[in-house]
Length: 384
Ligand code: TYF
Ligand code: FE
Image (cartoon, rainbow, N blue to C red; front, side, top):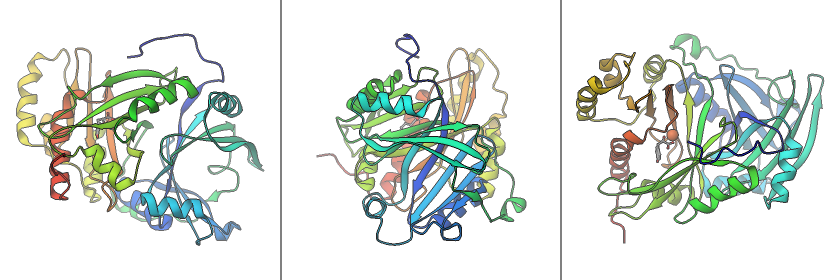
């Protein structure tokens, strides 16, 4: 938990993750993948048909709390987007935070040394106004502060209601997410601590939790992680780096294929993970596999738990969902395989029952399962 609960920092509250903005090679098709496999709905659009001639953006939503935007350039003129595509492939450009006061947070971050991407602007249309401001974080990733002044339109000024109503969601079982629970950033070796310190310094985040490679290792690869969070702990950002093991760390594999730092996974929170995972499996989404021995161990530990796991363990096992617990509560989590040809971004689904951890008790089994995939890709090679 939080090391220090000092006084509330100035600059106003963080209200949560506003949206995740992906820069991709083909936003039209990437959006369709998240609709089909994850049950997102088309929400907002901006592009040629709305008079925007350089970049197409498709915005999806799931429930009231999860918004994913996908953008692609229409041509070679947008050098920043095209270079991003060449370097990173499809990836997360912007982890946008919903805030009370975008200007105040931006001004404070800049005063503390953050690099500006977009000075504060007030954007308006007939549906109200928002204030947006952006700063650079690790690698080519940015944070936009989104201050919604009771904005009533679709997503942001300049967007229209997405024209597409996809019949696929009425043919397939629904998937319901609540909010983005956390967003994880992978760093090259020796860059985790400076990145965590950047969040402490420029955004007044604090260390929520950390683990070093003595816990986070398998026989082969290892990693370290520091979780930083805002004062209210509505934004949680684990920061990973590879640690030296016998084989190339999964974090190093990410850094090699993403070409540097970037978002490794987005965790989506649900209240009914069994329903959600069965629905996503029916939609053809692939998850990491977990050996049956994991569930043999779990069953042995159940009599010693201080609470009852409400879900049926047979169904948890059938779906390869992971269970972590302490003396007060438990969490259920599962991880997709990478969602692109480059082994970079994946999604976690998480359900919490009085447990605010990240699944440390599962790390060994989880990392063995990730390494199995890494080895199938020919990337679990010896470390020099
Ligand atoms: O967010 C977390 O910390 C957990 C565990 O490469 C995790 O989801 C950490 C590192 C990793 C995969 C999962
Ligand atoms: Fe996670």
